[in-house]
Image 1 (cartoon, rainbow, N blue to C red):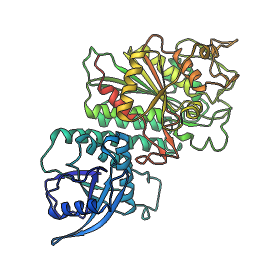
Image 2 (tube, rainbow, N blue to C red; image 1 turned 120 degrees about the vertical axis):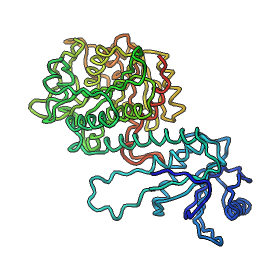
Image 3 (tube, rainbow, N blue to C red; image 1 turned 90 degrees about the horizontal axis):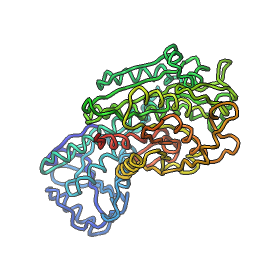
Image 4 (tube, rainbow, N blue to C red; image 1 turned 90 degrees about the vertical axis):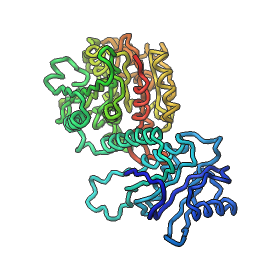
Length: 489
């Protein structure tokens, strides 16, 4: 969606005016016919301005005919950012249904943050994946051009909006990666996507392939992915935007490009969407690209542990005992608990190599988190109160919500093994699955401040917000970028 600015209306055909519910006398647009139209509609109570109220009609003046769209924001005092985004997203979808590809909006009368968030919501919803369609003529068109009427230039507001739309661009790229099928995105092709990203945004790239993974004894990653013809990759992207003295933030993403469950095979109605099990990896790829394009003053290392978890004669099995990168032995109790294994090796490897000030991992890790928190909150776990509070605070400003879950000492005890240092998954009780998974990961980070985000419920789904779509949501990019923007060490 291209953005342009004008001081006055020219030959615009579709005019969008968002209004608060209590706005009986909104700021004038400077165009008498439009001002008169808005006042009349408000006076007649044709339009009340309730959330997502929409009134569309035609305005004919002496020079041209225009389609006027009034969209309600609700009461000013009840306004919150995500509500504004959803209204913008709903409008974007209505414009597609109306086949309006070029529109103009007047937002000078709104508080600056409200107007930029409204447009952000429009942009977030202005997405679809049609790469694999051969016939596209019946698809509803996306909005291609948005003209913003400004009586005066507002450089700071324009900068804020440009940054939001840049992040939206990277969210769309993440959605694409997650939505692509597993025969299109697999460990090698995900590494190729990372290589393209590194060239485009000036990121340092390192890819560990089969021999290097085995030589470095990343045995948990190798075990999970060895059963596929597409062998594992450990992909590292590095962005250095801060001073050399600044220790980096380590981001680790689960990159399971297809999860069959292995020998503990997933059933029908669960296995079909498992090409999206690499959402954590895709999210940190989008995040580090956005950091580079925004030129954030921070150093970031992003590691994606990429593998396919399939069934074959060479696949790992329940009862296997595997030595992790950090030297600990793990008894495999369920091959469908593979995400924690690849994360464990990636975390301990990344912490040892890069000595980060903090480590954050992102993964569609457990169905238990989805059952506990639903599809609006990510589960959050940490061994560091300061890091935990920082991410919680950012969650409120970005509306990518998190909810703290416990790593109780009793849950940690449930990982005890009679044969090895630990079991991979508590299959005996099956309780507190998200917490026992986090307890497992905690054993691989040492004293490094660490935070785990279980995004199983929010990374994709079939009940999207108005600015999302069925499928990948792109959750986490706004959250992580805003957190990294505020890192000061």
